Length: 259
Image (cartoon, rainbow, N blue to C red; front, top):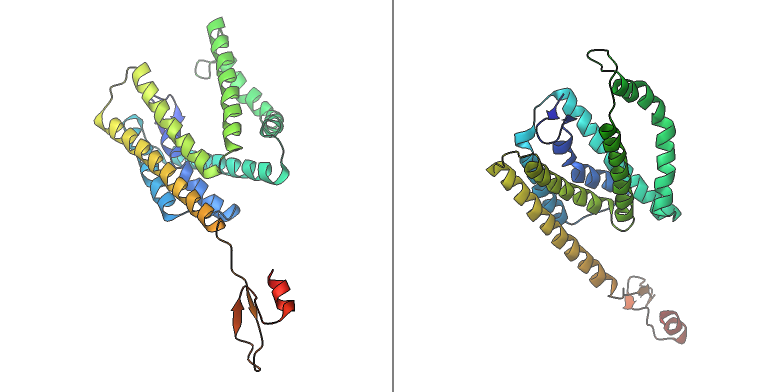
């Protein structure tokens, strides 16, 4: 498997390929939601994705199957965010209510898989085939992990309810930089210039993305503040190609229509 072994545990290429989530999101949003972005927004995604990928280069061992699986997982995350946003927009359901519904569906769908795969491996060592003594520390860590994951999902859906899927994907990529920085210091891994360069690129990319989205929003507000002109074709001397701005013509009827 392609795994990040020293800082991030046995996650198959997940941390580097999760950096591609903004790319998947912007492409799928264009196809599914018909969202268009400015060229500045597209350009800002390059240093974000490249920075996270560079920052994780020193923690990566490669395998093609792991890479394909991680890319498929990242695309699934992007689709989940896009369709969750679409449901929130089209139905008006509360984001925490949607999270509750998705949590119930996930429980019924994956509980049998968890029982026959993870629970068995948790109780019996898959290598030695002997029972495993589960201490209270392990149970406490599992409980803490569940609580933190629950809080993370609440925050994620709360953020997704107020921003676009692309902005959420960029925020998620920014979170990877924070995770990388914390793991490098907490686990005592040496910080190389490649890690620093990647994190700096990603941070600058996020700042440029925020500036690009601000400029895009300002352009939309500027365009919406200008009233469109109305042109009404009027027949003059048998010629129907002539037009008068705002539908203003010489008779009272056309004046009323213009108003």
